[in-house]
Image 1 (cartoon, helix red, strand yellow):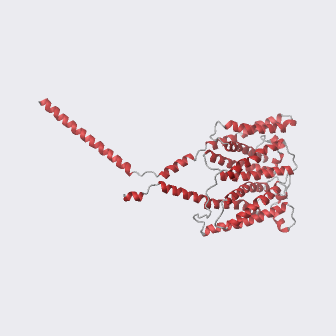
Image 2 (spheres, rainbow, N blue to C red):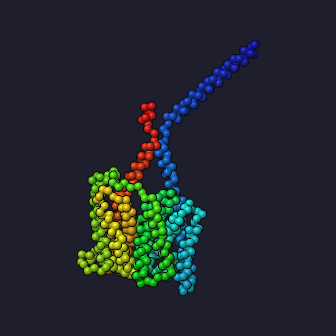
Image 3 (tube, one colour):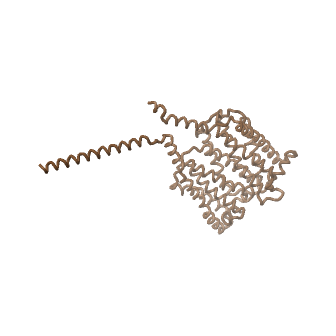
Length: 437
């Protein structure tokens, strides 16, 4: 009995311990549940925003584009050495064939390494490679490097050794290069590249029009290598026309009811833009009359600050650029001026402004760099400290971009942001109603 009593007391002790541990675990579990309930939960919009940020930051194709472009340095050095060993009679033909092979093999070589599976993606990566070639041409023109494009510049496209040729190559190796990287980024991340594409296509159409017409009117004869520019003359239309006709246009708020648009500062910006367009129209008309050999003194005063306008060696590149302004840009600027001070702005104004800004992005860079080229004759080169020269040309460059920024802030971005805010409000539960419940 003593043993039985002892065992009973042990059992009762174990039972009390098990009960205590069970109640303790249940209390701990309740405490954890309470903590989880009180812990602030992320809003659905914040989660989606984080996911969107992670998706939109894929730079793998951009990095590959940079690597592909940098491969131009050793490749061109090797090719230039091979050209130096060839019979001069076959050099030009060999350069043209080599150029075609490069244009075909570069996209084929990168297909296994890139995520882009579109013709546009392949094309823009290829163009980063050719942009680096143009940067090499610029560096060799100024004597910073040697032995990369020596034979090609002497026999293939000698007009690129001119001040204008140097300017467009410098722009291709810097401005267009960054634009191609941005286009690769947009396409590889599934973003709309319609606006960027229109901006780029307009700039490239201007570049190729001036170059090809200038070569046709200049003192250098066409060579096989001249026709290597063919893809750059065709591609802007191949990709640009579908951007206008097939791609979805951005959401547009015709009234432009953006914060700050009705403020005094917003009205000042509108007035500055309108005045800038008036000055731009006058500058474009003045340049066009000068290149057409006007004798009016009021226009010839401008020529004293930009004598490059009538410089035709080796080709009338700047003349043709000025005529492009007159027939292509000036009509669009007149339309923009009409709508600048109006509250309601039509959707087509966005495309017109993109085209203007794209052309000026390329043209004004080329004009300014050409006018300041140290290899020009002393009676042609523009003084770096000529204030009027800078004012005139910066007005042409800045005003379309200012208008583009104002349209983006007031008529494109704000409506999209409004939709995002509305979507967030629909998805986030009403906390006040929950509290009442």
